[in-house]
Image (cartoon, rainbow over all chains, first blue to last red; front, side, top):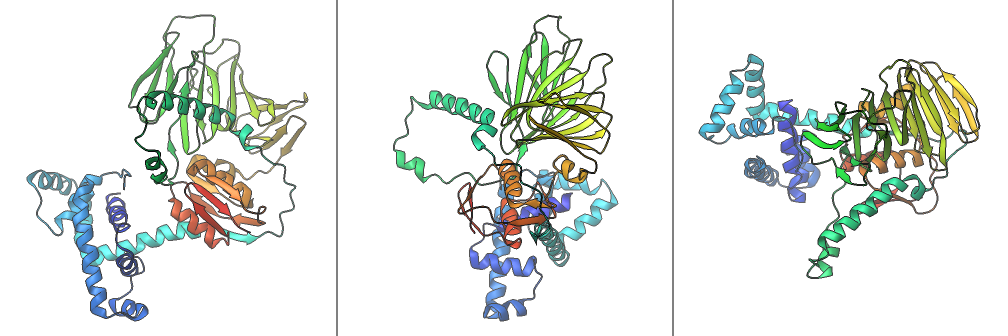
Length: 68
Length: 397
């Protein structure tokens, strides 16, 4: 139960991510693709994918406490 | 993000603890939970480990997607059953419409002294997001007053002739401790679109109302018979009272359609269309239609009645009939129109067909907790072409 709630909270917050960032978040966390695969598929630099991931995590961490 | 999840606060504390320091209060809560059981401690380790969390997220996302994809299409080829229902929306929802009008009138009355600064601001407002239905209803008392039960907490809602009407955990119950009186006061409970509700009648009979339904009942039953009136879809578990038959008068769009006489039992009545279907799960009921015809149902049989017909189905799809009570839509062998009607009632949306109703037959089930975007995804997967505009979905050829 607590797990479902935790996961749902993360996905709820992720809905608010900017489009490009959300797309990479979904590929990383919903489809479990690797940085490499995502970079290839989207024709991006692998570092860009890493940066977008870092951005998504920072966003979620920032928004999380506000949900209380 | 307005949704409430169980243990939300604790979940946030757990997630936060993986990357930041907690307040003393948060630490205490987390410690108390961790000390609760070894299972909790294991779960905690899993949730704060980023690799394991990522795995769980993927599993969770797949589960949700799977649910959406579970609704599939089978192109219509076998379903030759005659379609019985051209429906008249206004008549069908006339009670709900009446209530809406009253509520709107009330809202206007309350706000008319504070006209909005400019009308453009109103049209600029985004329509409310489409969300799954939930528990809620409007109670109409004998004196014409109305109580919206959605946001009320537990406690006594009203008293009627000495009978206490109490709301507890989203259910309404009648406590008959008052003095006896001859005259029967009637209450009506209405579930608008997007709401369902459980009611316990004064005799202990439980009634579950699906969305877009109503039940009219006396606050205290007559000794000789117990009579209620319904529209829409209601599932009953009737309490047995010796020498006091339980009667359900069913109204459909064309007017009163018949009566179900109950002899102690569990059954579902679906009267959304211009026939009404009584499906018996347990016990025995007598179903009559307007033409003085009547028949007895055995468990797992369904009677299909209208003012001028009464037929029996010896092997109805019970899972399909009872799906709504179990939190699902069952769309097995359902046409697009039926699917859209069910979705419209639960998600409180309008459906418009741009040019006729496409011939699509569905199979599969869908959770009633499914998000609206999940539903739309499922429809896309089922080859339904549509566009949305606010709370309206327009079905394209």
